[in-house]
Length: 473
Image (cartoon, rainbow, N blue to C red):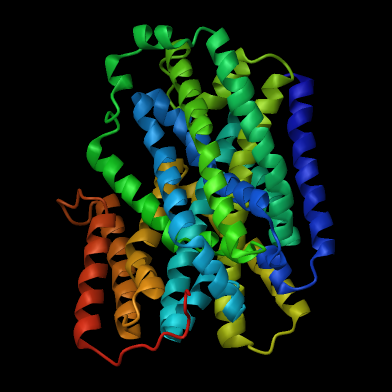
């Protein structure tokens, strides 16, 4: 790393912190802190979608998977595109109308408006767990990049990345995330697509060279393994309908049309980013075989092959992708704790200034917990899939019923979420630590099965029918 490239990286860090301070001075209410006052246009919403979902797994993890298994790694971003498209077409405008009607800031608030307070609690616990895991995945990926670039040990790199992300997120809230995501998405697209692919080709990574030099299995679309691909695609697509940040973006839009257009616009930009990350991973596999930790391959490849200046730009783009996903994950979990727990059950009369202080403090705590998770479990993909599985298995069916089915019962929603969440956690821990032999299936499937059985059984036979207090018309 030259002085120029290192200067670009630390200059970017300083810019992010400055944006956080600037945004903190512009926010006056909790609505400003969590949804930017509900006044963002389509392009800003699209940048928020892209910067959040196209993060560590898409770029760092995607390139690492392409290094290991080839073009099959593109399934991750493909699943994101499918989920974003379906949410934009089916949910975004409806959610914005419901948010305006009930003055909502969080997804669990929406669940309570349709079901009851205990369902809100169950949804809050699921969302906090999932988004803390998401944030941990991004912090782990950022630490891996900085470890490869600066030569620091993993713990020190993790501490630097976590400190910068948590500080500007906690201080600036959603406005800071919006401002930084404009910068981060632009850097990401320029670095990975406009510079990354041409330089990889110039270094010898042409399609004909890749297909000649790499194993034939690297060009099999199912080389990742179809059971793993199916579980990943299903969990990611379902997570779009249950992840609170999907609802936060819709609440932040200035209109239902802007919410819908923003999601659909984001889909258009996903394809070139998926191609760029995969192409860089394949080229690295051809030029730098035998690297033990594939999570570091992208930073190593860039450092070894890219020219001075462009090297720093691309690495900043990669770090931008990681940071822009980590920040919204931290803020989402913070919103759940401060709004859905503190304000709802502990201090309902909390004033705006007090809520802002509490929200900032919770953001710091969530960021610290995510950093500890990343330190203990540095595998990026595993951390993210834990979050996807928790969200999609426990919350998908009650969420769909909330929007589309008038006779969904509160009792069915609560127990469906609670028992599915417990199933996923117990199944994951039992399989990871080999407590019970034979648990090879992904915890997504037993979680979904429990959710569906409990929901339909209780919806048919138990309790009074819930009134539809929120309408999507």
